[in-house]
Length: 452
Image (cartoon, rainbow, N blue to C red; front, side, top):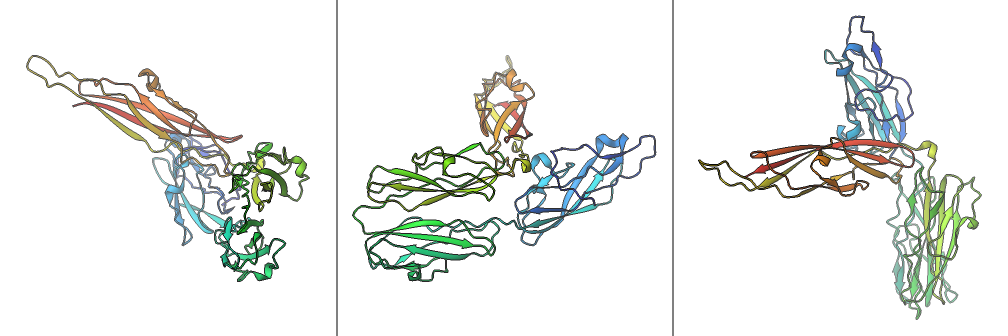
């Protein structure tokens, strides 16, 4: 097995590079070459490759490649359906996305219509990545003086499922004498403390997966204050993959004040990649709820938002944006869904000895085609385009309602049954695209209009 680490474009049956025996020589059985063993990170697409397989040129049109999982990790639920529709187990270089860490053994057989090869095997070793965990301190809390406040960090996660350790800290208003040492069970996911005066207490949580610390999560505890503290919301964290716009958007419109007071916003840059020179100057605005940020290198950027109601500043809220490396962009995988059968019916009069049966038209029919199962290994935003390739839809004056949407309706006008049944066949092609690469798949729909 030869080393092959690059991810190759889709091929449905025959790809470029297969070794083909000379037609003038006697044909021998095909030889399967499953490619080199692979090492990938959990969540990364694994492409296996049969392009070094050997078969006879005269049988080239009949060659079928059959891939099969021989062994998988004990806690994996992978099976042959893990290969995408467009890269099926009969493709030259199908892909699948491992679901757990461990070794996956995949076999390959090649059949040319006359004989089959022996099996060849490739081992895919899936390793845990090294992504930092994410802390979550449970949101805003409200309490009274002397009342036990229990904090909740149980929603904190590690992408690789590593066990987390917790580190909580506490700072109180000027009237308080409490410090972080006053947090009970501060090394656990659900510690507690008892506030000693009115005001806003700020709670910070960081978690560690054994090798990396998270970005701090910051929450507030509002203790019986006449003016309630506003709540900052810096928006959802996002992984932009390799397709990030030059300026990414920051959205603080989810921030609010419990008393309905107008808010003032304050954005700041909390963390940037080690080789970045970006600062707060890269923010399009530090005081607008919908600021933007111009990044300079790939990596993880964290931003902090606080809001002010005229009396109190909120606890900071942190949002993270990950910018991927375009050189490591993996093409998307299109999935147009399963083939469909659509049935319509028309009312018919009974035939008599003087006349044949007559039928009304089948009514307008609407059905749906969906690309919802399409994926992008880099989590890039995808664009979609549907086309009907046989011309049948145009010939019956039908229409695609939203051809550039992931899910679209197809409208077929009223149809007359030929005698008692009329059948139409449609072929819809789906193209999906990230910022630089495309993939396509198709789905067949059979429409039947039956007179009853």
